[in-house]
Image (tube, rainbow, N blue to C red; front, side, top):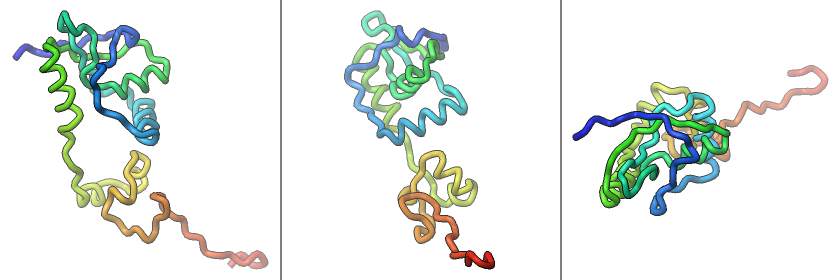
Length: 150
């Protein structure tokens, strides 16, 4: 296996793979945009440099869309030289090999507010659902007397 070369590329030079089956919801797009705005791109976009598939994105389609939306011009890319069949297989593997979250570790190590901010919902987490409505934490809404404030 050849070492992977990392190189900056102009976003306008990159081509979206016509077969890419991965989609994200508006909420997931918003969450991704917030993450990229806060931390930038921390993993390179995977791009094919094969002579027949030059500059085709293999992994990172959604991140490129966000970068375009944010007005970025350049992005770091991991360059691979693959024929179309291997390119398509890698695309599937990059999108499918996601794994699962361990709910106990999420609840024990991360603040619930951060989990919601990152994009988790009540349905994603094994938590007390009674204190949440519409996937958001409900604040204590005790009635206060207008005359005395108690």
